[in-house]
Image (tube, rainbow, N blue to C red):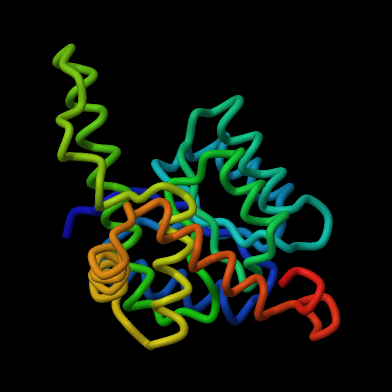
Length: 207
Protein backbone atom coordinates (compact mmCIF):
# COMPACT_ATOMS: atom_id res chain seq x y z
CA UNK A 1 0.00 0.00 0.00
CA UNK A 2 1.46 3.37 -0.99
CA UNK A 3 1.84 6.00 1.72
CA UNK A 4 -0.54 8.97 1.83
CA UNK A 5 2.41 11.13 2.83
CA UNK A 6 5.18 11.54 5.37
CA UNK A 7 4.40 13.18 8.71
CA UNK A 8 6.59 14.04 11.70
CA UNK A 9 4.82 13.61 15.05
CA UNK A 10 6.34 15.21 18.15
CA UNK A 11 5.05 14.81 21.72
CA UNK A 12 6.93 14.32 24.99
CA UNK A 13 4.14 12.11 26.35
CA UNK A 14 5.18 8.63 25.20
CA UNK A 15 1.63 7.25 25.39
CA UNK A 16 0.22 10.08 23.28
CA UNK A 17 3.12 9.71 20.85
CA UNK A 18 2.59 5.96 20.49
CA UNK A 19 -1.17 6.42 20.00
CA UNK A 20 -0.71 9.10 17.34
CA UNK A 21 2.03 7.18 15.54
CA UNK A 22 0.02 3.97 15.43
CA UNK A 23 -3.23 5.66 14.42
CA UNK A 24 -1.68 7.70 11.61
CA UNK A 25 0.27 4.68 10.34
CA UNK A 26 -2.97 2.67 10.29
CA UNK A 27 -4.55 5.51 8.30
CA UNK A 28 -1.86 5.09 5.63
CA UNK A 29 0.74 7.70 6.53
CA UNK A 30 4.48 7.20 6.85
CA UNK A 31 5.19 8.42 10.40
CA UNK A 32 8.43 9.67 11.91
CA UNK A 33 8.20 10.31 15.66
CA UNK A 34 10.19 12.20 18.26
CA UNK A 35 9.64 12.86 21.97
CA UNK A 36 11.61 16.13 22.11
CA UNK A 37 12.25 19.20 20.00
CA UNK A 38 15.95 18.62 19.34
CA UNK A 39 15.35 15.16 17.87
CA UNK A 40 12.38 16.52 15.93
CA UNK A 41 14.55 19.05 14.10
CA UNK A 42 17.25 16.47 13.33
CA UNK A 43 14.64 14.06 11.95
CA UNK A 44 12.95 16.80 9.94
CA UNK A 45 16.25 17.74 8.32
CA UNK A 46 17.02 14.10 7.52
CA UNK A 47 13.61 12.89 6.31
CA UNK A 48 11.94 16.11 5.06
CA UNK A 49 8.35 15.23 6.05
CA UNK A 50 5.49 16.94 4.26
CA UNK A 51 3.76 17.90 7.52
CA UNK A 52 4.59 18.08 11.23
CA UNK A 53 2.14 17.51 14.10
CA UNK A 54 3.59 19.22 17.16
CA UNK A 55 2.77 19.23 20.84
CA UNK A 56 3.35 22.73 22.23
CA UNK A 57 4.45 22.30 25.85
CA UNK A 58 7.54 20.10 26.02
CA UNK A 59 10.72 20.00 28.07
CA UNK A 60 13.57 21.80 26.35
CA UNK A 61 12.56 23.12 22.96
CA UNK A 62 8.84 23.80 22.75
CA UNK A 63 6.60 22.99 19.81
CA UNK A 64 6.73 26.71 18.98
CA UNK A 65 10.53 26.55 18.74
CA UNK A 66 10.34 23.54 16.43
CA UNK A 67 7.63 25.19 14.31
CA UNK A 68 9.69 28.35 13.88
CA UNK A 69 12.64 26.29 12.65
CA UNK A 70 10.51 24.22 10.27
CA UNK A 71 8.99 27.35 8.79
CA UNK A 72 12.23 29.35 8.52
CA UNK A 73 14.70 26.74 7.32
CA UNK A 74 12.78 23.80 5.87
CA UNK A 75 9.46 25.33 4.71
CA UNK A 76 7.57 22.39 6.24
CA UNK A 77 3.95 23.14 7.24
CA UNK A 78 2.88 22.21 10.75
CA UNK A 79 -0.16 21.84 12.95
CA UNK A 80 -0.34 22.02 16.73
CA UNK A 81 -1.87 19.60 19.20
CA UNK A 82 -2.25 21.08 22.67
CA UNK A 83 -4.35 21.03 25.81
CA UNK A 84 -3.97 24.80 26.15
CA UNK A 85 -6.17 27.50 24.64
CA UNK A 86 -5.04 30.59 26.55
CA UNK A 87 -4.69 33.97 24.85
CA UNK A 88 -0.88 33.86 24.67
CA UNK A 89 -0.91 30.40 23.07
CA UNK A 90 -3.53 31.40 20.50
CA UNK A 91 -1.58 34.54 19.62
CA UNK A 92 1.60 32.54 19.08
CA UNK A 93 -0.21 29.95 16.94
CA UNK A 94 -1.51 32.77 14.73
CA UNK A 95 1.92 34.40 14.52
CA UNK A 96 3.64 31.18 13.41
CA UNK A 97 0.97 30.33 10.82
CA UNK A 98 -0.02 26.76 11.73
CA UNK A 99 -2.31 25.02 9.24
CA UNK A 100 -4.48 23.75 12.12
CA UNK A 101 -4.75 23.81 15.90
CA UNK A 102 -6.28 20.77 17.61
CA UNK A 103 -7.25 20.82 21.27
CA UNK A 104 -6.46 17.80 23.47
CA UNK A 105 -7.71 15.33 24.37
CA UNK A 106 -8.64 14.09 20.91
CA UNK A 107 -9.47 10.72 19.48
CA UNK A 108 -7.22 9.60 16.62
CA UNK A 109 -10.33 9.43 14.42
CA UNK A 110 -10.70 13.19 14.90
CA UNK A 111 -7.03 13.88 14.15
CA UNK A 112 -6.76 11.84 10.94
CA UNK A 113 -9.31 13.95 8.94
CA UNK A 114 -7.49 17.15 9.93
CA UNK A 115 -4.17 15.66 8.81
CA UNK A 116 -5.69 14.44 5.55
CA UNK A 117 -7.16 17.89 4.93
CA UNK A 118 -3.75 19.50 5.45
CA UNK A 119 -2.14 17.08 2.99
CA UNK A 120 -4.89 17.66 0.44
CA UNK A 121 -4.50 21.41 0.72
CA UNK A 122 -0.71 21.18 0.40
CA UNK A 123 -0.98 18.98 -2.70
CA UNK A 124 -3.34 21.48 -4.28
CA UNK A 125 -0.98 24.35 -3.52
CA UNK A 126 1.99 22.48 -5.01
CA UNK A 127 0.04 21.55 -8.14
CA UNK A 128 -1.21 25.12 -8.61
CA UNK A 129 2.28 26.55 -8.14
CA UNK A 130 3.75 24.05 -10.64
CA UNK A 131 1.11 25.01 -13.20
CA UNK A 132 1.71 28.71 -12.56
CA UNK A 133 -1.90 29.19 -11.52
CA UNK A 134 -3.32 30.84 -8.42
CA UNK A 135 -4.92 28.55 -5.85
CA UNK A 136 -8.67 28.25 -6.60
CA UNK A 137 -10.73 30.46 -4.31
CA UNK A 138 -12.68 27.46 -3.01
CA UNK A 139 -9.67 25.23 -2.45
CA UNK A 140 -8.05 26.30 0.79
CA UNK A 141 -11.16 27.00 2.84
CA UNK A 142 -12.18 24.51 4.47
CA UNK A 143 -10.27 21.94 4.63
CA UNK A 144 -7.68 24.16 6.34
CA UNK A 145 -9.14 26.92 8.43
CA UNK A 146 -7.84 30.21 9.71
CA UNK A 147 -5.97 29.59 12.97
CA UNK A 148 -8.68 31.02 15.25
CA UNK A 149 -11.39 29.13 13.36
CA UNK A 150 -9.33 25.93 13.63
CA UNK A 151 -9.03 26.48 17.37
CA UNK A 152 -12.78 27.07 17.69
CA UNK A 153 -13.48 23.87 15.74
CA UNK A 154 -11.07 21.98 18.03
CA UNK A 155 -12.88 23.32 21.10
CA UNK A 156 -16.28 22.22 19.75
CA UNK A 157 -14.87 18.78 18.85
CA UNK A 158 -13.58 18.32 22.37
CA UNK A 159 -16.55 19.77 24.24
CA UNK A 160 -19.30 17.98 22.31
CA UNK A 161 -17.45 14.85 21.09
CA UNK A 162 -17.96 15.86 17.46
CA UNK A 163 -16.03 14.97 14.32
CA UNK A 164 -14.13 17.82 12.69
CA UNK A 165 -16.79 18.17 9.98
CA UNK A 166 -19.63 18.17 12.53
CA UNK A 167 -17.84 20.82 14.61
CA UNK A 168 -17.30 22.99 11.53
CA UNK A 169 -20.98 22.65 10.62
CA UNK A 170 -21.98 23.68 14.15
CA UNK A 171 -19.71 26.72 13.97
CA UNK A 172 -21.18 27.65 10.57
CA UNK A 173 -24.70 27.26 11.99
CA UNK A 174 -23.78 29.65 14.82
CA UNK A 175 -22.56 32.13 12.20
CA UNK A 176 -25.87 32.00 10.37
CA UNK A 177 -27.89 32.29 13.55
CA UNK A 178 -25.93 35.31 14.82
CA UNK A 179 -25.30 36.96 11.45
CA UNK A 180 -21.51 36.91 11.85
CA UNK A 181 -18.74 35.68 9.59
CA UNK A 182 -16.73 32.58 10.46
CA UNK A 183 -13.66 34.35 11.83
CA UNK A 184 -15.68 36.70 14.04
CA UNK A 185 -17.81 33.88 15.44
CA UNK A 186 -14.72 31.73 16.05
CA UNK A 187 -13.01 34.55 17.93
CA UNK A 188 -16.08 35.04 20.15
CA UNK A 189 -16.13 31.33 20.95
CA UNK A 190 -12.42 31.22 21.80
CA UNK A 191 -12.69 34.33 23.97
CA UNK A 192 -15.67 32.83 25.81
CA UNK A 193 -13.71 29.68 26.59
CA UNK A 194 -10.74 31.74 27.79
CA UNK A 195 -13.08 33.72 30.07
CA UNK A 196 -14.51 30.53 31.55
CA UNK A 197 -10.97 29.31 32.25
CA UNK A 198 -10.13 32.36 34.36
CA UNK A 199 -10.44 32.26 38.18
CA UNK A 200 -13.78 33.69 39.33
CA UNK A 201 -12.30 36.95 40.67
CA UNK A 202 -10.45 37.67 37.39
CA UNK A 203 -13.48 36.76 35.27
CA UNK A 204 -15.57 39.28 37.23
CA UNK A 205 -13.01 42.03 36.46
CA UNK A 206 -13.06 41.21 32.73
CA UNK A 207 -16.85 41.50 32.66
